[in-house]
Image 1: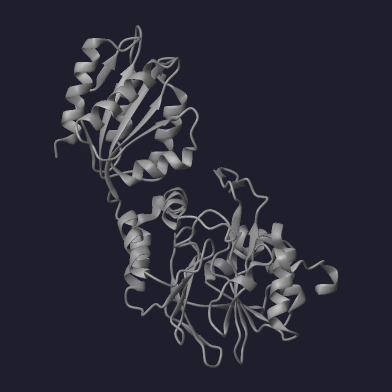
Image 2: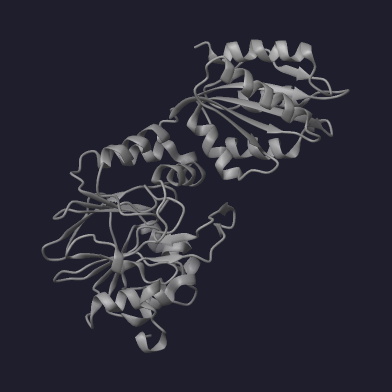
Length: 403
């Protein structure tokens, strides 16, 4: 499998535009054609699959990419190899968007070794049937090292960030942390955008359930002198590392990032929406600095999850439906439960013309979560909001804003 099998278009290869170090090169690629990451998360600009190569006496390739973009990756890799052969393929994460080209790499470079955790090595046959990996792998454990010459790789176990086989790699000479999926974000590198917004949406939807495990990794990383972070998605982080590390500490501790109110509503005919927007208006009139309102029937669910984790207060407003909760809200609550939503104040608004039940059902779901302070009483709208309901919303707003 050589360059002659591919039409290499240098305009599609992002590695030329990313300056890492003289010895460490970027060979990742942008996937501008992807609409849904993991078949569920909207990525308007696509997704970057990052891969790196360390050029030394021994050459190490840091992960591969999704097979969707293997053509560009092979072109970038062979461009940097310049006729040389890699000695190692370091596999930090076995998810297909990073491990998609492992079998082809093994076929092309039969003398190279795969360096990975024991769990990752045992996963290889799950994704590559019929490939003989025997005598081809090196299993590494916590703080094992691998010398490339001037560069030394130190392997740090990161189980459940966000798969059980994950590790990250610290290059000791240039103080570079190859962070696997940690510090990643949605989007491509060819489009400049605010890091925090898409990194937050990525974190809470991909890693949000595993805050304890992320904290464990952060504690290990705090003992390292880090000059640069090279994630498997998103840009290489070189400056203001305390900012990125600080956000990860906040997120993984389930602490609110913003003192504000996120109102998420699920409305059938617009009446619950009217109440939700009226509450937002009242909150702003009473001095709330940050109030965000989302229609769960029409929003990006991943963004709604992100906003719920970001804000210090959450308001859930839902219609009753078939003796239950209107499905868009039920779906949202399922996402919050699945991502271990916790440590927040939550207020509830229900609507029901003859048998309002959404409130008590939402209450039960919230009380099942950790450290959720449910503001009582539940506000009940019967059919359409009336002047008496506005007085109840005024009272609810005061309680929300009273710390």
